[in-house]
Image (cartoon, rainbow, N blue to C red):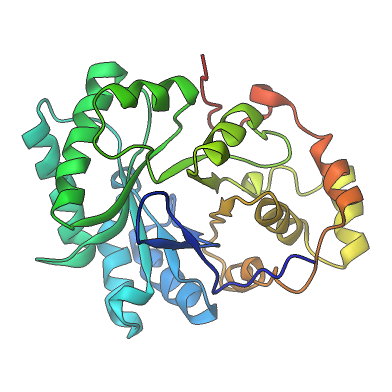
Length: 282
């Protein structure tokens, strides 16, 4: 049985920084709820919170981290930028605004990602160069990408001073396993983060999943999170329900057998299985 723990820290490529094995997502967590959800997550043992400019709750995440009483260096906070601002300098200013919402004046974030590959080659380059500037100043301890396929990461080689990106955050679950990019990232030492690991509960009644969950006396959500962990992904489950926040972290006392992992693997539908986005690799 893999000896995983909620306190595990995984090394990032070419970096002294380490990322917690499990994260807490706050996508669409309303501003009046987000602080309480984050505090609950930190209380039950999460040490990794994933937000984004697009989620409009960076300020609340920062407030929760400060309110928690935990030392800042014990909580790993990620945010993301969706699109460039017209120049490296203007984009950098957008990044800095997020850092200050989360960390306050002079603060930092642990990981800053390009949220999407959709801004085209010149936009992606502008975003990355702004992130490299932020990283060079220590305001982002690590930098990476989200929804990037092989072609997007390879494209960066021509200009990136920081390569490979430390992280690629993509949609991952049994129905959308994105094996090409997963294998590429692992080969290059890039940490693979799994967003929508519980498929927004859309598959809670899938017969195959339900059968596996019954076998381990676990919820379908717990099985999906454990599946992601055993795939060596960093899952980022999201919920604002206090009981679910706790149960989603209670996934370290069982092991899905090789046979059952294989059964879950058969559910893969490739890009058709994505509920948000499958990356383009070519």
